[in-house]
Length: 319
Picture (tube, helix red, strand yellow):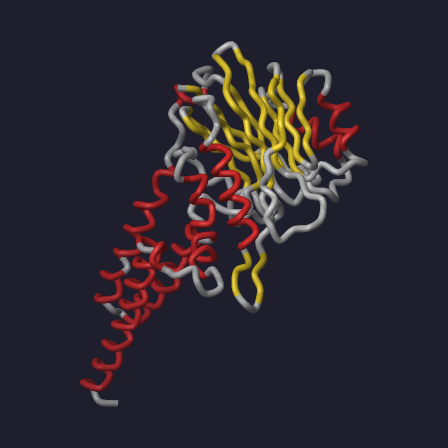
């Protein structure tokens, strides 16, 4: 092969790598531009958005192999985009924020309807002495075991359907929140609201379990989840109490546009990835703690239980 032909071939491959780097950066920064009308592709991309940064690794290796300066320079774009979007989550929590500067410690956990050790799970959740514990997938045969294990330290509880809230502080005005999608005809109750009375004041706590999503040949099936999120968003928007906390298995990440009815009006933690699912090898945080007129900080996962989700802990400070 002639030298000019080899140079041209290498240059072309370098341009292909550079184009892929630019495309990756574009998907990171403009993921909202990916349409959701066909197979909910936008939501699918956003569910795994932080992992898109891994594309840089093979591109970098190929750029070195091809000795392509163009590709190496282009890789600065996706690295910069990823750092802009997610770099802050890698920052350590300031020492002052990990002491007694919070008002409440809360725990959120989908305990799984197949959990073989409800009592052990309850003890794991209570070990850190959180003020609130929100649970989903509470099945009738396991519920008495959770109640017995948590009762000594959590005298107040609220249960509606398969979701529950245990509290060290009094609960009043407990009621179900209807987040059932219109397409579900079976009995289905996965939302509750309670007023929590603490020394710092009262706030509304919502516990929810949104429908699961599935990856199918037709695309990302999230219609029921999205409808349920809209119903929950309307309920929270109508909440009269100033401070609100939402704890739940929302079956979506905070980047997923399907949760926009919630993320548009509630704040999320500024630090920590805290991936919760699947427990064996967490790929995303689909369990969430969000708040209005309050600050969520120091989000972290707890030790694994008998569930396929990891428990999620967070600090909650009312404004």
